[in-house]
Image (cartoon, rainbow, N blue to C red; front, side, top):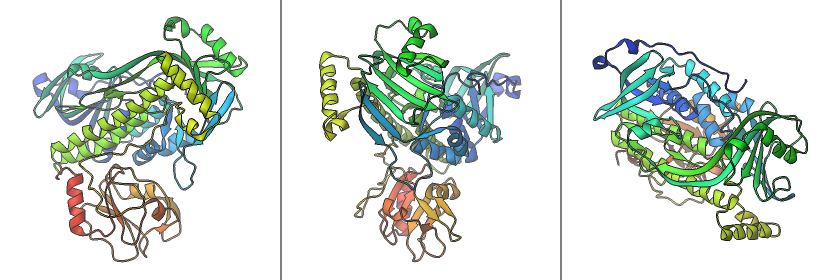
Length: 536
């Protein structure tokens, strides 16, 4: 794929022939066909909801932009039917190395244990991810993807939203029960509802260069403090598919962006880093850190997700991955509200859970930024002291912050049922389900996350034991570990879930733990299900 060349033609829709008073009505309109909007639309469509997906452009975005996608994101994409394509094309990695000057301080492994279907991370240019998601959208007739359809006005009503949409052939109107704004950091919908970001913008600038070259570097994340090729600043190196390498270089806050992004000025910097100039540029860009979010993610029937709702620095891969967590969190709740199986108040839990996750990501991102780009003499002295300690002590290594990598959020949420039993481990209510290998009666190996997909799109009870099956509430699927009719524990499931005979976990549709019990009963499960669906 050549960056920025995947282009889609504008097509006139019959909605444009309607008069405004007779505008077409839809349950959901998603605005923004980036990774978050595309994934959210696919998830809703797979749940049976028709979706109109609008984008003001007509092409896949240029440049690699987001490149690091986490294990959690890959498991979500598995549920959407695109995980295999992402991993097959992506560069798999789990090891990172931190350098100070020319010396390695330490290295880490984000997934040191076996028994997971997906790796800790893949590196994949965002334009590939978007292209695969668009291909999946085309397979789903429930999604109506309209390119070069720009929302220019929004009118909120008690029962929905009226949108005015500009096209190459003029404007038209549609109505929606809910509008999901996934239109990025410069969200026009955010301005239309009168909302702003609050938070911090950092002055330090970073240069991004995607360079194509043949290199023998391992597929690891390398981060330097004060490297010999870029004295006094920091640098980052990542491998991407197609022999493309992502390089981030910290610049002076006062550096002139127009001057710094010129290829003839970037080339000497990269040549010093690599020790040669046998490379070609794929993409060059500059950015500043921003750690900000909206105060409220829900404004009437307009709901914000991804960069439209929150922004963090790119170090730590928290931007795109947190946006994808927004999508999987929102889709099942919105589906239930549209079906009338939950009250609209269930959507408030989306704001509660994901705004707390945004705060966590902003907090970690801000700490990383403060360490990587000290804004005061005192912060610079502290960093030098920590880096010196890291050469000699383990606790010093733990204090070094080269960008804490994205991990799944753990929700403190009213949808979770507090533990009533004693536990030595396992995922607590509000945590995401860990994967593990299992085997069916025929001996075929698979993974727990695959069994979760096979259980359907609703709530699932993960039960352990060889006795009688638990009497589950209506509409709840089961995954049984043990017994003649269950999956066999391949040695890690019980350990990772601290499971004893009769242990059971109630899993939400997004794979998060709603409740867990040592000895579940039908009344206990019904109460936990009611709480998890907003009826507590």
